[in-house]
Length: 313
Ligand code: CUA
Image (cartoon, protein in one colour):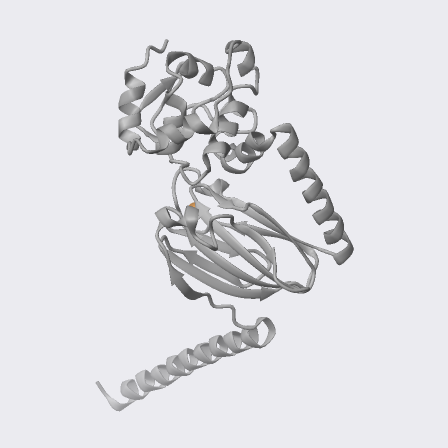
């Protein structure tokens, strides 16, 4: 190599070094800019728990919104396949929120669009993050970790409303929960929060992916009354045939729900979408019946074996 060639190469090397240095500088400036305008919101680990302990955990037994002071709120939220509990959160503008987040089963994400909140939810870990909502609006919560076949339906919402709207919301919510308790509409409310993303609001499921409950659960009830509580308590794993379509998904266990909640949900399913016409002499499930099935210690595979023993069409 002669001197001329050597100098040409050295010149290009200096140019590439300058470009690389400039790019690093731009990145650092962008990070500094977002820190200055948005602040840092990095989740901290605030404790450990196990998924089994969640039903009796002081924070997660009844996840939701708690007002601590005039402006301070605590939001506890549990992620599970495939929803957030609670899935809808309403808060007044200006609220200073401490989120306590965890997962009941697999890795999920908690990303709040329009903010820089993005937390990985790890089973067994409690993550904490603080955020002050200064703008009225609707913020969508998305799960950004692939967690299974219905991952894309794992959405929630945070509504930030004016103080006067919040006052009206709280009044309406309290009135509605009182009315729901009086009318026994708890089952429908639980179905809407937990079951709709797979089995759909009309109970029809998704052909080949999530089995229908409409027109199907009455035959399960008729075949063996003790079967449906086991599906909700322990889940169901195995390939099944429902109303002419094959399914090979996994129904998760819902043992985190109380006995009364499971009974009410089953009673809702068995009387919605024309199911009551199929099971005319239906006696509603009681919390005691669910309690009796709770200590059997079955697995989702055991429930599958029980199902295979049922006399179904
Ligand atoms: Cu949960 Cu994806």
